[in-house]
Length: 243
Image 1 (tube, helix red, strand yellow):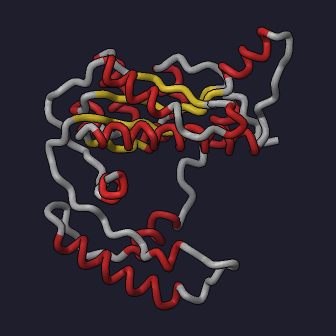
Image 2: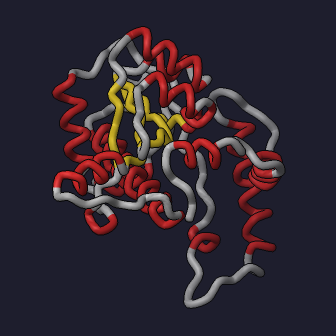
């Protein structure tokens, strides 16, 4: 069942030496394209990295060598208004994609598209891992992949035959996610400490990379200070001005 597939997801960071064919990758991309798209703008593109030297450089820049170098396929997902600008020019018009709203539209479009690709890959028995590390060096990666104005790399995805079996991380309880009719902050006083215990038990008992940690502490440490503050200037450089 689809529900069983979705709830069994765990990131795969080590793959067997099996390369996906171009036909397999193209099929996954076609499936991805059937995701919902705001006003059908389809504001996304994918760079399928097959060149060995480019993949090595991407792995270095993204700081994810194990995933990128061992994967059966490496895809870089980009928000893309270059194609839309070209489409407008062909009918004698121009577009303005610089607003914060269009940044959101592009980000949402590419995320929905990528998740369809991920589910399609997992349905075929492959494992996947999202690589946010692409944003560690957006300027250099844009140069590496010859990305024009209007295109911004948001994340990569590695796909391949898993060479590891990771446990599924316990998610927040549904009660912490769903709010009926109005937002309820008070319920977190009970739900979060209980979830911290669940996550601590998971981290202490999982098969690898065991640690004594709770979700709240981990999230507080992760979000205590701003990260990748250069992204705003990079997006402006690519034409996203946040007007």
